[in-house]
Amino acid sequence: MKNVTETMNASTFIYKQHFTVHRQVWRLLTYTPFSMASKETVLSAAKQFVNFVNKTPSPFHAVNEIRQRLVSNGFFELKEADHWTIKPLQKYFVTRNQSTIIAFAVGGKYQPGNGFSIVGAHTDSPCLKVKPVSKITKAGYLMVGVECYGGGIWHTWFDRDLTVGGRVFVKTDIGIESTLVHIQRPILRIPNIAIHLMRDHNESFGPNKESHLCPVLATAVQVALQGETKANTPKPSETSAQTKSPLAPNYETLADKHNSPLVTIICEQLDIKPEQIIDFELYVADTQPAVIGGALEEFIFSPRLDNLLNAYAACEGLIQACGDESLQQDPNIRMISLFDNEEVGSQSAQGAQSALQEMVLHRLSSGGSQTAFQEAIPKSYMISADQAHAVHPNYSDKHESNHQVALHKGIVVKINSNQRYASTGITVTILREIAKLSKVPLQEFVVKNDSPCGSTIGPILSAGLGMATVDVGAPQLSMHSIREMACITSVYQATELYKGFFINYPDVYASLQF
Image (cartoon, rainbow, N blue to C red; front, top):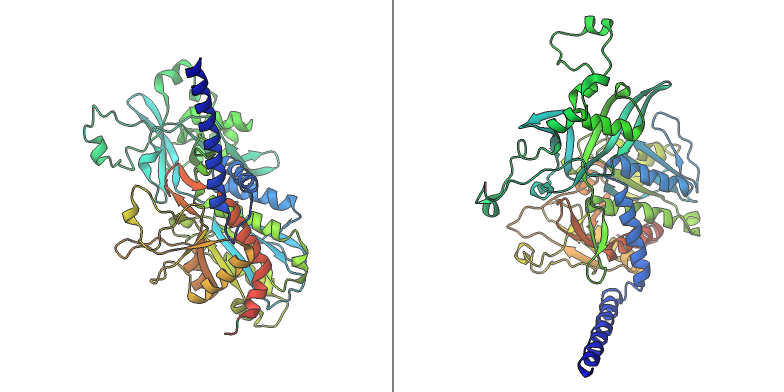
């Protein structure tokens, strides 16, 4: 009996010690001169972000979720093709391609020629996209042809339970509609080759992106058994058959371009017929949901942290900054600009290299003097928000020794003397003041001289507009993997920094004596 009692007492001691350490660690992580948030507050913010990620397998879904958040908080949608009438203290947003969104709140003291307080981020992430003609059959398997989008760590996509999400263009009685689709069950998989068949698998596995990254959808045998054939596909009319070019591919309908199980699943999800589908744009995504993890519930294990974390935090920061009376006294327009296609260079109609940002700023500067836009730019400031590399415990030699960014220790200021980041001495100084007022700690990141440096939308927009810009991001591990890793603290800190920026930038700018 004594041994049992001793065991119980030891277990109780270990249990108490675990949670005592848990509390002490959390105090160390959060108790700084900058942040006094409770773990409950930080964890709540992280859980809301996780819910957001799990609803957004594509940029179209991300923009739609943000759009809904804005509408529910009093923002009005504008159309690019319409005339805009902008009023002080009103809140608006405009979208392009359903994958880029710019939202803004007009300060109560705004006049054309005043500045813009902008947080920029992007909505896309490295992934696999379904090809326009994806039908592939190999060795008795029905497969889906995919294209690599961005610079993903492609070996992480093997042996994952995959699905698709995106948009479908549907013909209806009233016209053509764009409908979001997200198949929330595993329908695809990219199987690894057995080590018995590739003995050097662990030493030199480098998949061919064209031939090895093709997901399996079904087997031809099972499709035949279940009757998944073209029997239900409508035949083209005699007129279309007569006018069809002899040089055109032999695709009578969209269903001919893709294996039938994929089309069937989409039709069942949307309750439509195959002949109604004009086209679709689908992203392959992991079905494993984003979660809060770690022994102390301090991590976020998730797809697409780069860069949905900053897109989400920018939206929340703007909404929260409009929740007090500070907007009434603001001479600026507070804005978030969330672009698509950053991962492939931003050179698209909906990317940061397009004229969209400049066109919006020009429209908001109209009504003043002929040089109102030119007067506004030097009064403006942009935070380019994109994820940053936390020091990796197993590869710490890959990080510059004096700039080893850590989880929980603050938002990262990214600096590069070769202008891969837009940060300058002036813009970093301004951010430090804003961070101090916002009670958010900062860290600094510089890449090693013998390593290449990534880039962001910051240099693109800074150069294109001539606007003061700083590059920042939340620290994370496994960037561009199908599953990435960050800390729960970052969601709260990023939101607080962006909110504090919107509220405090005009005063910080006014304090500059140069």
